[in-house]
Length: 241
Image 1 (cartoon, rainbow, N blue to C red):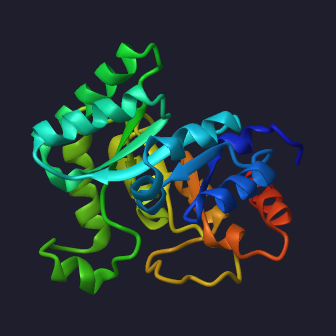
Image 2 (cartoon, rainbow, N blue to C red; image 1 turned 120 degrees about the horizontal axis):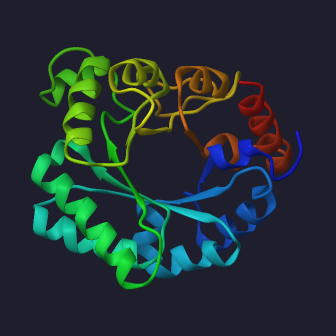
């Protein structure tokens, strides 16, 4: 496994840490993880400065805000995100067709206005923290996989670029939707790692075999005795397929 290999473009570090700690960690693992995922905690505390800080380190920023609101509000927020030059932006598929279309439109217009490539808009299907009983409790019918497939079809028809799903749903979505949607799988746990609040987690090798394009990893790198070795091992497993 060499630094800068294609596996780097398939790994994102979930930077759910204080900004200074997150920057220091990402700088160490960046040779093996091409994306820095800026989520709600960092963005609420620091706003766009959290995005630009990781961009200055050369990382592609995955802005994981999971937008879910009325179409006009989401379009405005997506436009601001696109103007920041982020590579990926998340919205909730459950927001519906009009909201999803507004997110795509806003992200593209915002990026174009600042001369940036448009971000991929990824629709979140079923959160990886939800077990089958949770899916039923929130009003979705059928298994998590069935719910994810319904939401994924809606999102793709609305024009999103990709989907966020658990590794367990990736293979079924590939069969259903073909090679085009960009599939992002959080809930990645190497063999032996604690699952924490991830109810539908799987290994990197499982996700790759299932057809995932991007694997998101956070705590297994944050808490590793040697984060660089952990990132290197993840990249090697992705490369091996």
